[in-house]
Image 1 (spheres, rainbow, N blue to C red):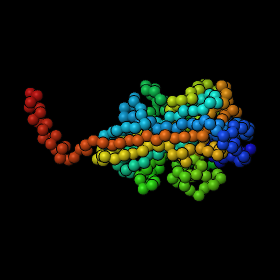
Image 2: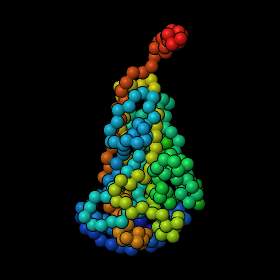
Image 3: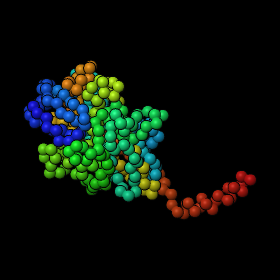
Image 4: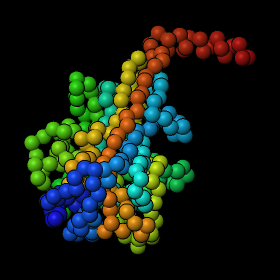
Amino acid sequence: MKIKLYSSTCFALDGNFCAAGRRRRATWAGALCGGILLLVTAGTSGAAYTGLAIELSADGQLWNRSLVAAPGTTVAARVVASYDGAAPVYGLAWVNFQPRISGWISQLDRMEDYLTTGNQDGGMVAFDKPGTGQAAYGRIFPFAAVALGESAGGQQTTLMNHAEVVGGRGTIRIAQSRTTNAVGTGTGVGQFAYNNTNGAGGIVCAQPPSEAVFAGVRSSANAGIVLFAFAFTLDATSTDRSLLVSVPIGGVSLFGQPEHSAGWFSSPAQSAAAVTYVPVRTRAAALSVRGPVPTPATGLMALLCLPLARRRVR
C-alpha cells in the first residue's frame, strides 16, 4: 500500500482497505506530513466508533449539547472526541473535521477570532484551561502538531470561515482556505478531493508522532478530548430563531478508509507506527435564541428615565 503526499497536511492512499466488521493491519510507507514523518499502521474496528460531539456554553464553564441564549450573546463551542469500543486504544492520534453552524445570518452574526495558522511548536495553540495567557480559541494542546498555513506545494491550508447556503439555510463552516466547496460537493478527485469530497481539507487535529517531540507532552485520554474551540456572537436584533452547530460526517477525513474515520494509538507507546482507524459518528448541538430585542423606543425611554432615577437617589 502506498501513500501519496499532496500537501503538508493532506495525504491520500492507494490500495485495498479493511472491510467493515473486520480488523486487519497493513503497514504503510512513511509520509512527511507538516514536517513530521508518519509511519502508519492501518486498521479498522467494526464494532467500535469515534464520537465527535459539539458542546455549547454561554459562560465557558457549563457545557451542554443544547443551549438557550438571548440575542447578542457570545456563545462558545467546542468539538469533543471520545472512543467507544471493546478493543483497547491509548489516546487519539489524529482526526480531521469541518464544524458548521446552520441558521447563520451573514453580516449580522459574527465569528470570533481563533488561531488559523502554525502549530503548537511555534506557540500557535489554544489551551483548554484558563489563566495560561494563550489564545482562547483554536486547536487545543496537544492536538496541533501539524502546521497549517501555506505548504511547500503552494496549497493554502490556513483555516478560515466559509459562508454558504446549505438546504436553503445560511451556514458558516470552518475549514482550510482551499476547501471552498460545501461538504460533500465538488468535482475534485485524487489529490484535489480535499475540495470537498473526502474531508481532508478541514481542521487537522493531531498529536506528535514521537515521544521526543514537544517535550513528550501527550494525551492518552479516550474520552472527553477537547480538540477545537471557537465562539460566535449572535445578532442582537434577531430573536425566536434556531441554529444547529454540527460536525457534518462528510467533512470528516476518510484517511483512505471505507468510512470517515479517526486514528487512535493501538499501543501504550503511542507510536505512529501503530494506529487503528475507527469510524466516526457525530452529534450536533442545538441553539435556541429567545428573549426581547432592544428597540429604539425602549432605548429612548431608558435615557429619559435616567435623570429621574438620579433625583431619587439624591
